[in-house]
Length: 248
Image (cartoon, rainbow, N blue to C red; front, side, top):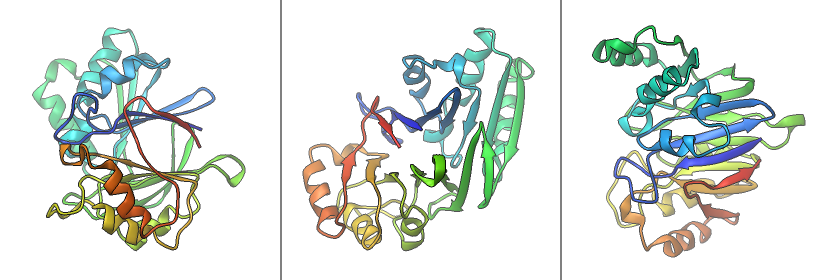
């Protein structure tokens, strides 16, 4: 399974970090996880392109995770693609319906399927997934994607506080993608800081942990953020960046 970080930024994007989006690929299967502003452009630069991705899995409905959803639908329609599946937590159908009410000319342009999932096991686009709830200002889901032969799992936290339940959910995964929105010293809830993340991860084992959903506040502070995490968690922690590709 290959993961491409399309967007590693936040609701306050940076020139080199657009909003949240991840591309998963295995053989001829492709899945887009979240589709924030700028992600469609990043996707267009991949080998798959927006023509090659017909399924989107949403973690939650905050704007920086969904704002390129209708632009993706329109781009696929104009490219001659005929279908799009949108999967996400409770409320996804109402969210998509409201978007199409606002942009009615896009309704019916492609064969659109919307499916809602919860904190349970399911399959999407040929990937086997386990979901659990997050701790955020909006209800959302974290996802764990099964690797082949019981190895190479990928866990994605989505936007969430750091807490033991999430750390345990990802335990043993080859790759963990975790929110680390702000450096220490920022008074924030619903997102981790390096210290709270390091404390939550302590005692668990992962192949690699990639930090994402980075606000401008983290600029110039990456080394200190890593020091804070590594002072509490003895593992391989790295910063994600737009365009980074990793194998799980």
